[in-house]
Length: 354
Image 1: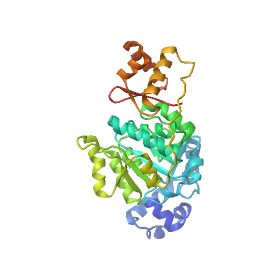
Image 2: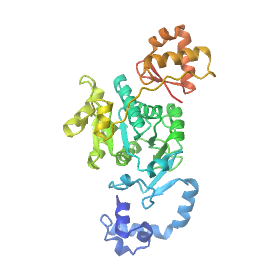
Image 3: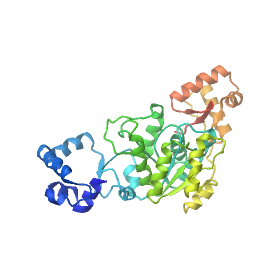
Image 4: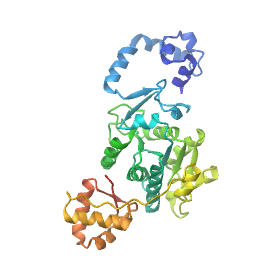
């Protein structure tokens, strides 16, 4: 926030760096003590050398004054002074001003919420929205995958450097996003996961988007932090209706009392967002011939049972594939390691489109 005030007061940070200490004192938040610290730091720091070293380590980043910096994010009170990016399409997606919608929620969702996060991600991706989330386990991953399976574009806002994969089990998702979307972070390359970084990351998710969807969240959830930021920034907040007996849904449902809008289906959501595209079902695609016959049978069974979007119970896969339980269990493990299927809570599985 202080850097943004300096930038707004002086017009650019170069002028602020060279300004007399008395002029710095005119900026809210800079008192005599901080002026003294700035004077000492100026004697020790060589900005151009520091920037050149940083640029060599992190060539892909934007500063606040860069015209490519996301304009919605620049509007918030505390935008990242440096925004790092990666992925094949991140600059293209942000430069086109494509409408962005976030889907966030608990890392331990119910099957219902996981399925609906996927359905909403699919519908938004098919409608041309960019789906934004945090690439966490649970709701985030389901939303990203749904968008990708619809042929849409998705952005992941990371609480690590853009070169880090967290959690590790999202490695297949990371590579898909890298090819068909992009990553954003306020942390340079090499920075790993640390608990305080995740709540701060959530303000970027809210700031990037015109609307935020909370799919499922208990009372103590980072998704509620994202919702609070969204409300502060004047973004629309939507909530997936959950079961009152489900403790994982109660935090999200409490947002309705604060003005959040209830989601009544994919078409209704798209209408609320000002867009009503056709929702054609995803066509069936045959398994790749490079897989073994049992693996092909299992993928075919999952796709037939799920109709291309929902998760499937393990017992149903065994019955549909007409294979021994031990064979299905072993082959599902291989398919998961190869990035063809994803195991969900409740011993359910979902095919990952590639």
